[in-house]
Length: 285
Image (cartoon, rainbow, N blue to C red; front, side):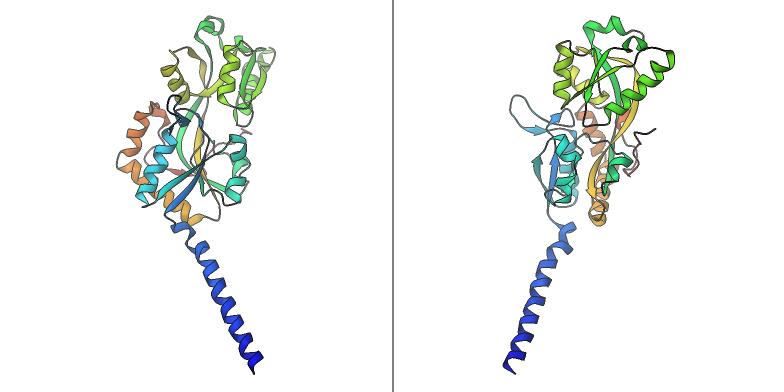
């Protein structure tokens, strides 16, 4: 009898422990602290003030405002773009959401078990130094020339597609695509003359010109209108809907528009009257 009684007590105790352990998982989407992963080197979306080291940018302002709508706060963690692109920070539970981090929503990335809350467009343009603008009045003058892009993003696919359409079809040599580990490295290679052009978002390029004396000029028309999204694990459906609802409220009350203006983003960057989920483009197009 005592053994049987103790066994029952043991099972009841284990059941109680299991219930406690399950509670955080059940309530995880109602948490008051949102753990967010972000990069720190893609102005004006997310970057550190070079003078103060303060973290700032459009992505950060948007997520902070969304968290406020949810009666929550944000705890930030810094990563490289390559780390975020592995999606390990999400899958291991170190973060709940990527704050945007200049990550384009693509079907290829969604195949990693994540969904994107699409919140801002970024037209991508080829550009060069203003001092070299006369050399590239015709876009096909770039054929055969070295163009540096961030190897971790979708930029390589964009430039290759542009080269196929503007160079290869006309019998001209393909663009020489060089890879870099960050936008900052790409800009350095451009200034050093190791590349003739690079690729960047129009919003980011506008910001760079505002702080670097208007030294960059676009070449031709935008290659694509990328859609940046905040990445969340697919199983976090409730959390995803909560974030989307908060973002839509910011759009409706005018906060979203004010933040676009604050960071100098063009009108075409606006997502419109409502945010979207998994509406991005494919690199195979």
